[in-house]
Length: 249
Ligand code: ADP
Ligand code: MG
Image 1 (cartoon, rainbow, N blue to C red):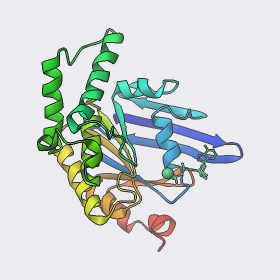
Image 2 (image 1 turned 180 degrees about the horizontal axis):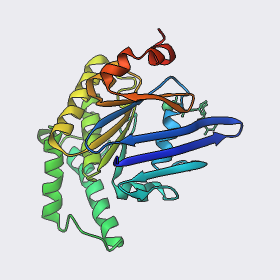
Image 3 (image 1 turned 90 degrees about the horizontal axis):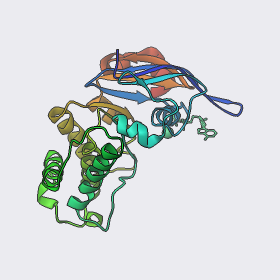
């Protein structure tokens, strides 16, 4: 059983079957890439996982619980965090203040739900924020205003904000889209560092094959709303169907 189990998911937009019959199992602690040509249904699938879309058919189980019918913030509280294409940070605030926000939000959410309080006082919050910044090598920049950070550092900060929610599953939608090679490599290194330091599962939608083959342990190829094949990067590279449908050979 994977930490994320997608079974027979279908989604139609009017006359268009965006997702046919998607089965996907993401194993705990792995980096799983979902690749496929434009219009294959990658973003639609991701939106079905985070509650932005509700599939017409099938089930989505995370950590043994169904996410279907839950609102995005509820799914977030279950332990799924999403990293966007453009880093979502607060430019007017310092690096440190940015990281404090999700930590406060998590505490508030836990309090309202009468669940646990992993962060119980201000000292804990400060320490938690520092730990997150250390994890992404940004502790020395904690007093810097976020808007003045480099693109790579903005991505690092966003990742720290994401990690401070202590997600079990990190969803990344083309995290290097539009980046220059240096920033792309910086992001690859960052994700590798995070993976090495934490028990975290990552599902990454990515166009850039350099990123996919640098990070992924499993790859699912989506074509026309249906998984074509799921395998290791080495096998995907040589797979005739994949070459034909995706790599254009
Ligand atoms: P990908 O992310 O793999 O490029 P998408 O999931 O964005 O693919 O889109 C899959 C198909 O569904 C495309 O044909 C796209 O035009 C269509 N589509 C996506 N979102 C919507 C929507 N909200 N309404 C209508 N059609 C959509
Ligand atoms: Mg997309």
